[in-house]
Image (tube, rainbow, N blue to C red; front, side):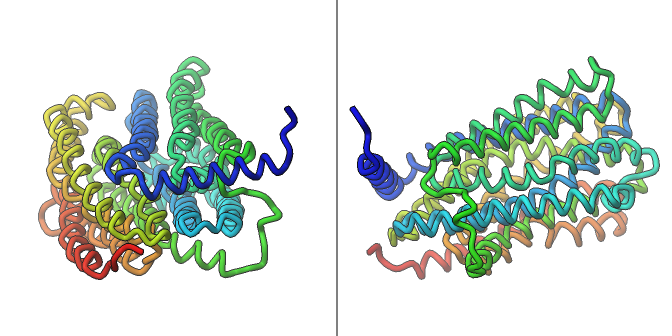
Length: 461
């Protein structure tokens, strides 16, 4: 039987209508969990890759382990721009699809992809041109610098693919196709874990092997994610024909994505400040705090994954004017995130010394790392409050409030504390307390703002 263009259009229309009903009629808890599980798996795999990368590199030398903490700042910069265009495009696309404006959604998808790839290319050129000053700015010591340079060079070569992948991943999530996003991210992450020991030890490439493994994995992940769009599995399309000189599209993407840029950008600055503050205490403290960051991110990824399952639900239903579902979604995500993260935090708290010892067994590294990780496990339970509030406001286009909360959550409180507490007589303990106290402060400010917004939501239309 021959399929005509009219049949294809009818099938596409039916598919869009089925997706609309799914996003606006499925019970909110079930929908968030359905969308959040693939994202959580992706986040866990990504964080396991980060931990595995640190684990294998740490076997080279103590200073090599410190280099992963330094180069993590570059990855945070790339993610800052990738998430700005990804969340900015995705949020608008979600609300446009909720309002049944599919053609306009493709303009946002194409613009977000093009601008992210362009920014990644610019970072690649500037980063390679000034690689030594960049590494020192990120907190590298003289002993860490050679390792950081070799590792960071490959991360910079993969920059355009990393930033563009952030856009592709987030558009898939905001369309409610988190499972497709999971395939792309987990494939790259698992490949990276497999290639690390092969390149580092079997091929005797040292830390350069870890960088090459990351670059190749990012390229594979990017290719898989892009194929989802080219094969027609998405409602929005990425194509040069959807690029235009309509600067309102770029403006909307940037304004909506600015909280993500601030969140990730401040995370990068926070990493620089943390490494610089820890530098007088030696490479062991720099390495230990890097291991703590990766271990606590494993807990955070669970809350963030469920929160990212909430984002498309929030944006889609806000665009469809089903405001009660937005409110129910935020409350469910907050309660679920705190409970789930609480279970993980308890396990990590109990095993903190053993977790840090997986990376390095030096007494100072284990002592500082275990103490800092246990403090983080207690206070990280406050983190879902600011995360849910930031994601809520960003997904519905309230960029001002999202930006304010993102700044508080990611560095607005942490950076001053990290600079002040060690100099106030607390020493290394001040470094350990800075991030946990920032979680608490961000939660205390975010909760009243979110509750006030709920009172202003109108009735469903």
